[in-house]
Length: 325
Image (cartoon, rainbow, N blue to C red; front, side, top):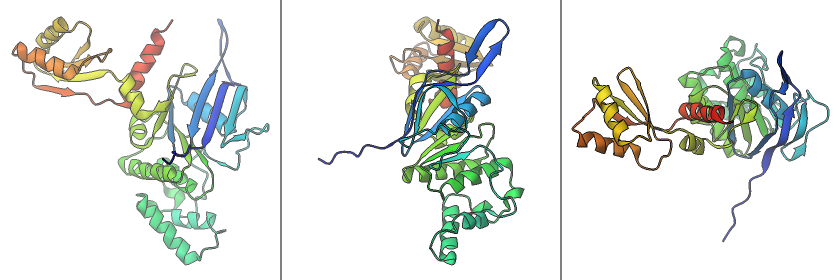
């Protein structure tokens, strides 16, 4: 039987600690983050999220070799990090600004400019590039002057440009930006193309939709630690315990009935709506609730399963961390 080929390691961080510290009058200085362990393989798209734009940006700057680190070891594309920092390595494409591109060119012109070294006939190359832009749901900006695009649009164009480089690792570090539906479709298509080309993308974000639609893996950074590293699917299945949402004009009676039958459930009542969590996830919570309600002849106006999502998983993993001694 043919063995599955092992994917190459693109990023490896072992016990990495930041040079930067938080200062407070009554306490010892505290590293922004410490003991960071992280691995990303080729063909993976990682979302790094957090509660601080400074922290997630700093982590990706360290990975990109744009910032030094104090402790540990970091290896990119199976190559050691240079001692000289603030130098982006040739095998890394780092996006840390929306002003990296020539603003007086349109998008197609710029892509023709950066691919001018290729031996292909210019007319054929232009046709190929335009077809690629359209295939990636970005035809609407192909002939737009870069300087007239919004910051979010320029951000997506800069990510598009990464496909026309030879960099194995792409770091997209613009967490504060928000994207409309058209941009999300383009980003998702670009991420899929990055995976097909067996490259690796790391991006910082606070956008749950961007993560769910574009990332294969997730690394939430909180209180100086990575609380989880793994697939987005496993993250939401493991940490989002919100099971059922019930709406009714007489919601208090429904709540009392459920609490009597299932004291182990966590229930929040808000605006004639019940949110039911099953932290143990031992049974089909939705089915169990429905059985209890019908037994007591209670038929709410609305009862629905809650599909696991990044937003709730992110809240719950932070709450779990805050409760630790």
